[in-house]
Image (cartoon, rainbow, N blue to C red; front, side, top):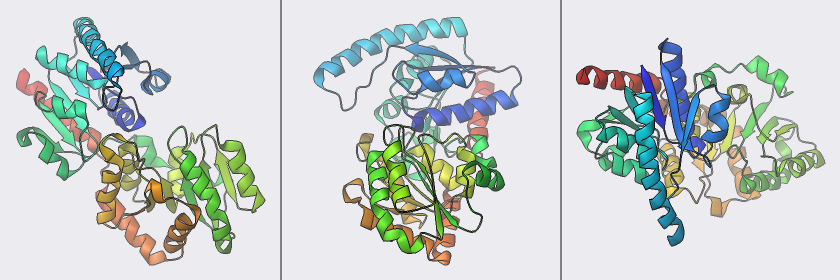
Length: 366
């Protein structure tokens, strides 16, 4: 089976594609997998390191760009359509999956024109522009939230959840204690703001420390800061003698998740999928500049079921975040209720379901 996975740009689009590719590679011995992305997308750095083949196209972002950038994007689209025709001609895929982002559009649309089975993944409640358009043409649409069905032709939609990397589910607490130099008898806070960090979150968390002094000997912290903020964040924890493992980037994310009692992070689709699959309580701080404000919509969905607390970026400060932390970590019953609610949203077999949909399309075509 030859498979193309198109899209990316951000981790929220890319990592579900990686999870899907890993599932296919592990379950189909002779599968050939080709990723399609752009030079500026996260996929350009991540995919080669994971051992998958990657082809780059000339597509550019369109939404939220200035007029001159939109004109360049249109020329990039025309060039990308030609590039995708050549890729399809040489690779001859049996099926094409689009995982979202502008890089997915030309490949999925070209596959549709070539009558190759197509499936798109929509991880957010409100679809992005590429998927809104592609939904009219593709054979199947895999969604994470039932509310998303309203944006697509209902006869094509399947409620599957968002694919997550299998290793995320296999974190080991004992290993985490060693890696992050933690105590067994403390509540653990896991804080991150994406692969590059989030200065707003870093600043608010360090400002919260004076308010958290009464909990200082009862909590410990794993904090991913990004490279830019690493040194000053380390100093802030040391100044107030908090037990904290501060890292520019967390490579052992499965272990960090496993030991976390409370997670503070953004509300990207992949992150939300991971924390709900694991049934973790969270304080979500939606990124305010996400397209269509999809992070806040994602977070509100979890909040409505009691799975998380939300702080909007404009309201974020040390005092507010400290109140939320105290509220959850000092109330064992509340935290357990949040964990159960979170788990109710989680789906761990999304990759399997999506591949089954793809197999069904292939059987119909044959």
